[in-house]
Length: 356
Image (cartoon, rainbow, N blue to C red; front, side):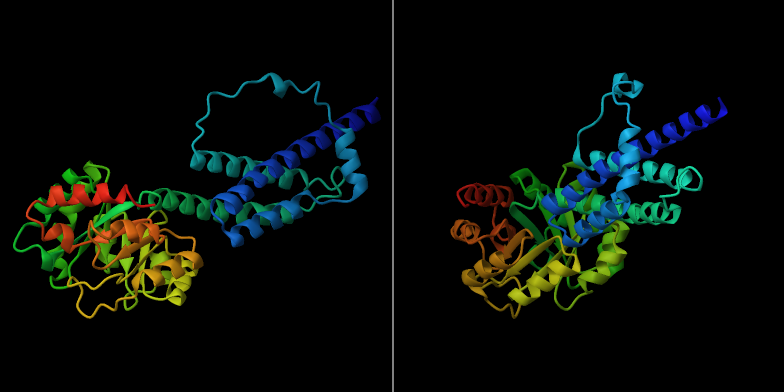
């Protein structure tokens, strides 16, 4: 009788191991597909695939024991309905990551019973669980930023302090938003940080109120202080790879480039979008080198990130720029120097609709 009870207990332990291995494998496969098919991230895809193979592989005889222990028809869990679940992708990622982590912890504990589970290595499950904590964070950060980056379409309005002609930043921003702008960047090369801080805070509050992205230019500490949605960097600014480590995981990083090589580097270093220019001659940036439409096309072929074209763009040429591969156009003079900023903004947004 005792032997029968022990055999029954061993069978139930095998059922638990089998269920948790299956649960972990299913969750890992979903996370792997997100990394591979949605984020196009080879590094995360390989990490998840390696964990999945390490967890699920085992010798044939043990796998046969696991399969023989199954009792799907008699599993009471089949009849238990889970409460309504959200189907947004980040929530699905969290749910599956947690499911895998819980399964790995159960497997780790069961594998510490040597007589019952001689084929399992507790250290393997522990290492996989801790690796998944970091992978989950990276997946979510990429998804959150990707969601923001998808909003970088049409007009990317830049408030350049030198182009305001004495008008207040907040008033111009209100006009831009009234005209339909969904992304606003603050650029100021003259003021000190203490002078710029209240301006940036006001712009951030206004943008948040209207669901508009607010991007700080060049200054990491300013972006952090006002909780900007992102930071835009030039080639002479803080390296993208450093900014990526210092910014919160949900913040965008943009990088200005003029060559294919710079674009590839920005992409590999963790940029979320790339600004290409100057497309045409411009008076908004002293010494800007004109790279032209052809360079924009070359960069579009080389990288997968959203592209923001900049430099001399107006309502007359915006369609050409979008047709060349830009996802958005950064505009300064064509809107800030207009007598009616809101109307100029509307006209460029309308012209964007005739592009790609």
